[in-house]
Every structure is written in structure tokens, then in C-alpha cells.
Image (tube, rainbow, N blue to C red):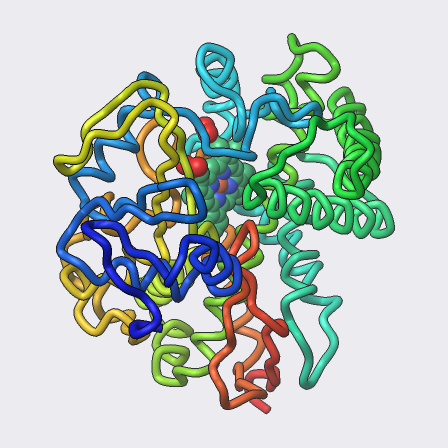
Length: 418
Ligand code: HEM
């Protein structure tokens, strides 16, 4: 890769701007990591006619994350014009975002999440009871498990297995839609007759139906989360439920997949995690470092601003990549190695060198929920089985909206005590 690029001033190009675009689209993880091999905390990337900036300096990341509300908004394609979830917490902006975040915050506070532990554990056990024995791709099972956990433990509701499968499929289509929309330089209006738009509208219909079905269960079993939506209009309520359905399962499934993959490949760490809760946490944190499910976040500046001594005009696109930042050798010794011991009796890294859940005002509101779910699930899996990798070659990451395992997570599960 290196020899293909030349550096023009502080802007790296790949023999002509269109080639940059091609390289970035083909292998964004490699291109971004290569670009980050510089002293500069703010790295200009020229793609065709556009220049965007990858931010790797902790001070500059702090500036971007903490000034979100005043000076920046979510990046291109993640727009609040989205007719389905534009008013949901993930995509909306101030002042609507502020009100929504305040409304749902209580239901996801660490104390509330701890109260959900038994319910979560029951759902996880039921999901694990369905797993086949022997050797298989555990990833689709993890997606099912995490979707079932959001339904049971956040909405305190239930969906029959068929509806859950349909929801997972529609949510996958929506993620694909977002993936193409965020990367595309052409974003036709949502009503335009465009193949991707029909995929979007198809998924929207299914997810709206599921959201209504979940909300209707509020009377029977009032969950704090659904209660917090009581004063919203029907479409705002749907936006919020669908946002949490999607944001609440896909990322956690990826985090679980990568954690199991790494445990299978590191038998000593697996044995320690089985015996010791501190090691279990360390293995999860380390998997989130090496394989952050949200590998790229983007923002657009609303005003002109200075970052790392560079003047950025209003409207500049800014990228923050946990994948890149978590692998910088100046902050992590042997960054490519899975070393859970870097989390044992060590000071926590800065929130701007390690940020799998984002940072600042727009950080993940589901972090406590996700961490508890990760802990309970991995604990339960290790209590049932020993994990052995089926493929000696490392699992390749597939960078879509979240960081998926290309080809799944192929494991042999050997029952404990066998
Ligand atoms: C391992 C699992 C998870 C990871 C790695 C993760 C990661 C993230 C990240 C990086 C952001 C910030 C995005 C940005 O700044 O552009 C975010 C936001 C968000 N996450 Fe998560 N997340 C996870 C699980 C969850 C769960 C379980 C839920 C819900 C129950 C959830 C709901 C949300 C929502 C609603 C936002 C938007 C918050 C706002 O803008 O105010 N996430 N997540």
C-alpha cells in the first residue's frame, strides 16, 4: 500500500484523487490505518474533489466529541431527514435530541440496568439452549440472542420467534441501506424511485409494524423505557423504538462474536476468563479494543473551527475511528496483540485513546446495558463449553456499518467436563 501513495503537502493522495476513493471503498481499515502513521493528530484525506479529516490526536478528539452540540452534527448520510428514525436518539440533533436523551436516560442508567440482570440472564440461557452442538458459525446465533435480549430486557416484551427473525432481517436491510448512503456521494431524496430507497421503505414497513407490536405490550408489562415514550407522537415513538431495536442488538452481537473468536484463539485467556470475573472483563475490553463494533464515526462541522492547528471551514467532514485509535503504538504497547493483561491492575486509558462506546454528549447511552449483556453472555457460554477455533487463519473483519466477522465466527463448542 505504502508505495502506492505519495504525500502532497499534508494531504495524502493515491496517484490521482479518484484512486483514493477506490482504495478507501475497497479496504477502509487498511487505508485509514496507513494514513494514521504520521505525527499529525489531524490527517487530511483527499477523495476525488473532497477533503475530509481523520482525527487521531486525543486532544483534538476531545474537542470534536465534547463540542458536538454547539459546533458539529452527525456526518453525511446519518441524517435527521430520515423519515423512519431521523427523530430517534441516534440521528436527531439539538434541541430534539436533548429532550429525547433526557426522557430515556433513566431507563438505561446503570442502577436500572443492574435490576434487569436476572431477566437478561434468563433470555440468554433460553437462547443458548437453542444452540446446536458441535461445530458451527455462532454469529447468526449471537444476533438472535442479542435481539431477544433487547426485546425482553429493554422493552420487557416478547416477540414470537418468526417475528424476531423478520425484525432481524429488516434491520439488516436497513443497516445495508445506511452503509451505502453514508459512503455515497449521491444521496437521492427518500421518495426518489431508487433501488436502495425501495429496500429502505420495505424494511421501514416491517420495523414499524414490530415497533407497534412492542409498544402495544406496554399495558401488560410496563417497561420504564416504553413508559418514557408515552407522550410522543406515533411516528416519534416508532423512531425511538426502532433506533433502540437496531442500535441495541447488532453492535452487541459483533462485540460478542469478536470476544468469542479471541477467547477461542487464546486458550490461556479463555481459562482465566472462565475462573476470574476480572479476567472476563479484561477479555471483553480487549476484544472491544481490537475489534470495536463501531469502527468509524463521522461528523460535519457547523461552524469554522481550528483542529490541531488546521483551519476547517464550516461543512467539513470529520472522521473518528476507534479501529485506528485503538491500534496506535504510542498509546498501546504491541497494539495488534490480544493482551487482556493490559487491563489488569493498570490505569484506564484516556477516553480519547480508547472509545468503543464513543465519548462526550453523543456517547452510547446503552453502554451499561451492553457491558452487562456481554459479561453475562460470555460467562454463560464459558460455563457450558470450551471454545476451539475451526479455522486457524485469523477471522477477517468486514467493515460495514458495524465491524462484522467476514465469513462468521466458526467455532467448535466442546461441552464442559466432556
Ligand atoms: C457493544 C455494544 C455497543 C457498542 C460498541 C456501541 C457503540 C456506540 C457508539 C460508538 C455510539 C456513538 C456514535 C457516535 O458518536 O456517532 C453509540 C451511540 C448509541 N448507542 Fe450504542 N453501542 C453498543 C450497544 C448499544 C446498546 C445495547 C444500545 C441500546 C440498548 C445502544 C444504543 C445507542 C444509542 C441510542 C446511541 C445514540 C446516543 C446519542 O446520540 O445520544 N448501543 N453506540
